[in-house]
Length: 380
Image (tube, rainbow, N blue to C red; front, side, top):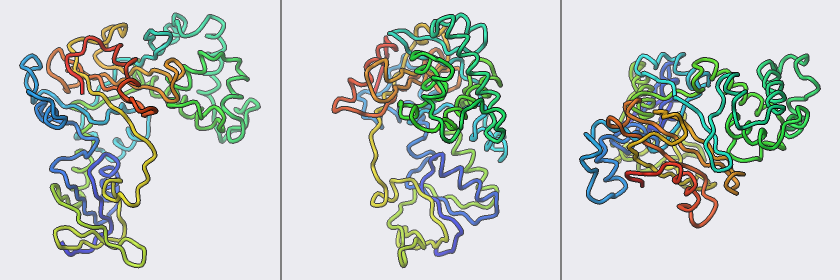
């Protein structure tokens, strides 16, 4: 192991595997290590179901009614991919898609006044939507046309808006959008978790809404894609890519120490041996003294035997509960997957609720989302 590498990567989370794959493709000598015996780290997909029950110390294991354990692939950190987003473009560019199959997510929903509403995916749906009044729909359509045609490199498209100076709050005011539309746009389209973006320059928000619109245009059902067999397939795909281009992988390999000389990283010590490197990439758990804790997230994994009510029996969807609807500072997200994406047994659904922890009672913070999922077979 006492070798010189261009790059050493610690951890096999999605970001680490992407970087490892891209660097290998570009001719770098890469060593990739992980203390775990599986790919994905904290963003792995756990299979079989028995392993998930063991991980969270659920007594008794899964009941027979949940089917075969090997039919389950449960994400620890859920994520849907924007159909026209950077990650999908990266998958296509590196041809990692040869190892993966994707399926469009059935729908996108937003919570308002105690009810779930579909985020409009067509002009017909927009006209029939309860999210906006008739006059607001016209103003919203005008706003969307501005966003879709916006080009930060063409001042002719600015319409009096300075993308790096004008705040998003001012943009909404220009188009006379009401608070309900602002909440729906900022949280269900731009996917901001808080309202901090309102008083920041509008360019990022405009680009986010534009990305949502472009992604939606590709598949019409929703802007989201999700890999068959779960997110754990993504890091494995990039790991295969790295290996093809000469990357070296060591799973189940302990990391004793990150070696420094004169304040710079020069290698990694493992089981008494040192591998030297010019550059180190790692997830925060490998460098706890250098990482800064900025908050906590609560996630609840729920197993269901039914689709979510008021979602038109979607086999997969995302539900966003904007913070203003439940008197919070940040949104609550619900990601729903099922047997349709080969992550659950036939007829079963997985709903993962997640949000930023704001109080000393995080379980109570996610209660509004859990109520939408009833009845729940099992949650943890």
